[in-house]
Structure formats: C-alpha cells, structure tokens
Image (tube, rainbow, N blue to C red; front, side, top):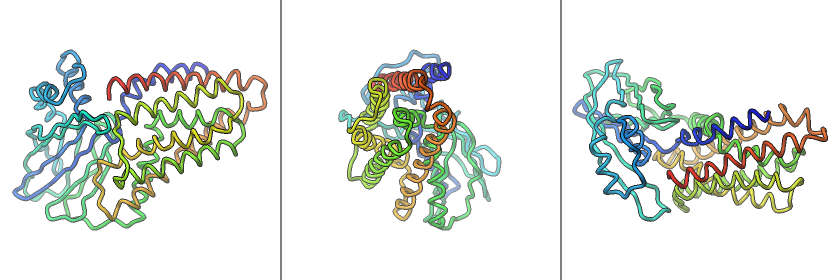
Length: 361
C-alpha cells in the first residue's frame, strides 16, 4: 500500500498537467455554401507550450497578451495538422487563424485564445467525425447545423475521434436524456479523470472509520459545491481558474495535513469542508461554463452533472471502505500504517499541485 501511495505522489504532477476537462471547447458550425467552421477556445499558454515542444523550441515563460500572440502566430498554422474532420469518412483539410486572444490583467478572469478553422463540406455529406490532437482530456464539441435550432453536444476524450455526428437537423433531446448525458460527464469528471477531487474525498474519508461523520462531511461538501456550481453557471459569482485551481489543490493538502496532526475528527471539520466545497463548485463549473448551454438545458444539465459527481464521490468512498477500512479498521496499527502515510502522500500531492498551478495557470 505504501508503494501505491508513493507512486501517486510521484505521478501526481503529470496527472495534474493532463487534467484539462473544461479548458478546451469546440463549436463546429456546418453552414451554407458547403463550408464548415470550427471555433476552438482553449488556454493560450498550454497551447503555446505544446506547439513549442512539438517544434523543439524552448518553453516560453509567462507572457502578456501581445507577446503571447507574437509567439503563437508563427506556430498556429501547425494546429491544422492536429484537426481531423471527416465527412462520410473523407477528410476535409483546414485552414486556421487566431481570432481572439485575451490575457486579462485581473487574475479573477481567465485567459483564453480563440482559433477559427475552416474547410469545405462535400455535397450530400450526412455524417461527420471530429478529432483534435492537442487536447489531453475530455472536451465538448457542439455541432451547429445549417438552420438548426437544436445544437448537439458531444464529448470527446483527448485526441480520440468523436462518435459519428449526424448532419441531419436535430430535434430537442428529452429532458431525461439530457440529465443522463450530463450525469455521465459529472461521473467521468471524478472517475477516472479527477484525481485531485478523488484525493480530497479520500482525505475526508481517512480521518475516521465511522461512516456517519464521513457522510456528514460529504453532505456539507455537496451542499457547498452545488451552491457555487449553480451560482457560477448563472453568472452570479465568478472567480478565475488561476485563483480557484491552486486553492482547490491547497484544500486537498490542508485536509490531509489535519489527518496527520490530529487523531480524531474536530468540531470545525465539517465547516472547513463546506468552505472548501464552495471552491470545488467553482472548479466543477469550469467544465460546463464554456459549453454555452441552451437555456432549456441549463437546469437538467446542472441536476445531471451534480448527480454524477455525487455518485462518483460515493463510489470512491465505497471502494476505499470495502478495500481497506472494512478489513483493518480495528487493527491497532490502522492509523500508523494506513491513515498517516496515506494522508502524508495526499498532502504532498496537494502541495505539488498547488505549486504547479500557481506557476502554470
């Protein structure tokens, strides 16, 4: 078990770097004149660093908007090589340009770059597939057909190819279907992609072997992140990922350090978990915010996404309880051999994430 925990610590920076759900968004418009346009919104710094690594160039430091655009401009044409859009199996080559780049001086607002790729649509095309090789994790592709009032949202895993996208006009999806789609996205955001949130839940779980206090903390966490998830999606509150993501990592480290320093649950622990849940809710909102959900999908999307998160959290707790705690909680060495080393590993991972996110966000 200690070997596994050490491995988590060693691999956590790489996993954190790959955790990009919500940072990339694609709006694919198949319009009149047999043309298509893909509007790709992503993080400019991470895009630049990927293109520099591909070209064998040294990694750029943190740059302002003008400097960032000047370095991206000569490299951005190579992004077209990573776009594979096919109509009925036939590839459609893309031309690409930067249409917008923002690096706000206010850290409360996220930086982003908008790329516009265009190409030809063959006559009579009925099915499209999309692939984008510069994303490391799940992202949304919103397909807007000519004259269509019901865009279709699908999710693509990293550089994989999307499921076939019908170019026939779509009808509005039933509410239960929308809930189910976003529930799956919420679950996948935690299991298997959200290693940081998994470690936070494990940090909550480790301090006590009694399930009731664990469920009280999880309930407080749920109420908090549900609140800020909804408020953020409705535009009532807003906080930049450059602030939220390092604080989420720091919350993971704090909970784990408290597990090491105290052998029992403190009275203030549920209140701290609630406060940390407010931060995590803003992080969860980042997955949905850039999808530009239609108004009639917002409520079922929030319900489904939140339900998926809760199901994943309970799954993490169930696995941890069934695999370790159920068998060894009565052992006199349980705290010394399980709680303390596991919490120390989680704390170290949280601190490493905090540093990396401060540097790279």
